[in-house]
Picture: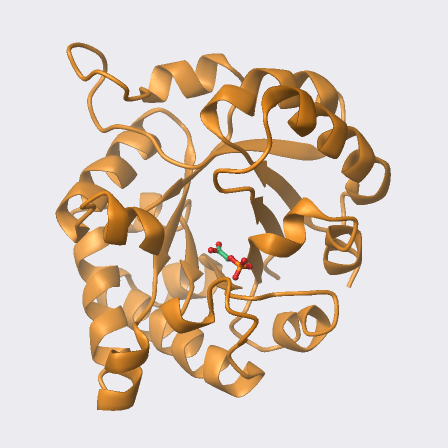
Length: 247
Ligand code: PGA
């Protein structure tokens, strides 16, 4: 039985003092062991939010990381900086990073490998554009993203990765994929994991859905066979997040 994982992606929201307030408020409601709950917060909020959630069941997550150990990479954050700050999860390859910051499957692959080396759990994102969906190439496209993003990773390690399927047309738009649409792609992702890494890995790996998840649609989405929770943007910044976690 795969444990559900519900992660908030705060994106570029909340100053450190605002982040502390939000984390304090949410902590009251989402400190549970029934599901893995993660707050993925802006880099500058990691330390103060870590202080707030210390001793709770809530895990700390980052929204990005560089694939080198250290050195002359102005503005970047290393895996050791994250682990030293108590971070357990890191979102990698979010579509916003691919779109605005030139992330590619190759850089995502390097980051996933580096995160695993440091014992961080990557939340690797994938998902198609509206145009790709209309062209009928969603499954082909997402399969390729998975194969390339996870290229060269062993079956033993691949199960440590969390995959987030996030159709780009559903992110921040209020337009959620139907549970059947989401399940179709999450099932296809599990199938490609099975083809490349074996049935055992396919059964173990956790796959989230993301894209306008809210308190109203969470229960139906998370009930689908191949959906093991959600990556939640907008609704993770509000009290509503408690209803998603306690769906
Ligand atoms: P959203 O964002 O829930 O605001 O659509 C999801 C995400 O981008 O992770």
